[in-house]
Length: 413
Picture 1: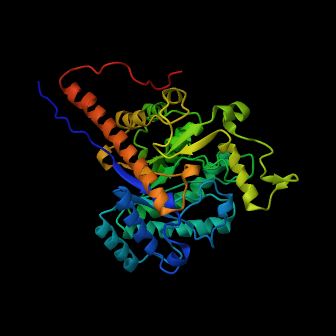
Picture 2: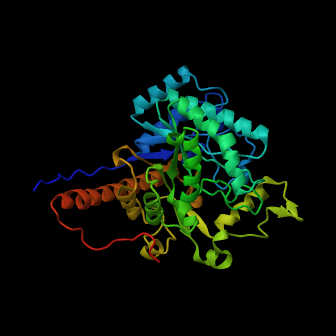
C-alpha cells in the first residue's frame, strides 16, 4: 500500500491597508501619494504580514459619501487622483522588493450600481484606474463590491447589473484580471429601509449573477472574496454555505478570503431580530432623511444593534456561539474551505481585515501589537487546519484508515 507524505498547505497571509487609514499623515501623503504605500509596506513587514491588500478609494475631497456616514471608513492608501503610471509602479515595486512584502490584490469598495448616473460614471472610471494599477503592480485580482441601486427592486438590479457592471468585467478581462466580490449586504449604506444594498450578498445571488456573466463571456472574471463576518450577520454558517456551493456545482466561485469575524449580541437579536433596528434610529429627523452625515451614519443600526465586527483573535473562544452561528469558528472555517471548495490553499490569500470598533486606533505604536497578535492567530489557526486536513484527508486516506468522529455537519439544525 502506498503512503502519502504529510505535506500541509497553509494559505497566504495578507492584510487590508484600511486597518490603519492614517499611517502616513494626510499632509505628507497628499503631497507625495506613494509615500503612504511605502510606509505601509514597512509597517506590514514589522507586524509580520508577508503581503498587503492595497486599499484604494476616492480621495476624501472627491467622495460622495462623507466619512461621518460610514461604519468603517475606507483608506486611499493607493491614491489615484492622478493615474498610476510606470514611474509610480517602479517606485512601489522597489519598496516591495526592499521590504520583502508582496501584494495579494487591490481593493476598492464602493457602490458600482449607485443610482446617480454621474456618480456611477465617476466610480466606473476610478475602478478602471484601479484595474490599470493592478496590472502595473503585477497582481491578477481586484476586490470590491457590486452594490445596488436602492431606487430599484432586486430583479431590476439584475438588469442594471447586466447593463452597468458587465462592461466593467469586460475591462477586467481585457487586462487579465479577476474581480472578486465581497459579499457584505451593506445594510447601512443608505437611510432607506433597504437591508440588502449589495446584490451579491449570498450564494443564491452569486449564482444568478455568475450566470449573467457567463452569457457575456466574463464568467471567469467574476469570483467571490468570502468574508465569514457577513454570513454570521445574515444567520448563515460557513460550512453550510460552502456545502451549498458544492452541491450546486459552484464550489469554484470563492477565490479568496477576508478574515474578519462577527460577534452577535443575543440581547440585540431579542430586541430587533436579524433585520436590525428598523425605526427611530436617528438617521431620519422630522419624518425625512437628516441632512447631517453623522446622523445618516445611524442607518448602520440596522447592523450594529445586533452584532459587532471582530478582529480575528480578539473575541473569546466560545464553542456555544460557534454552534449557534453567532461567532466565527475559525478552525472549522479553514477546514471547510479545504474540504468543500475548489481552491488550491497554497495559492489562496487570507486577508485580515480590521474593523473591530474599540481597536480601530489611528496610532501606529498602539495598533501594531494588536495587528501583530491577530495575524499570528490567523496564521496559527490556518496552519492547524492545514495539518488536520493533510493528516486526515491525505495521509490517513492513503492508508485506508478512517477519520475519527463526525465533526460539524452542514445544514444541521
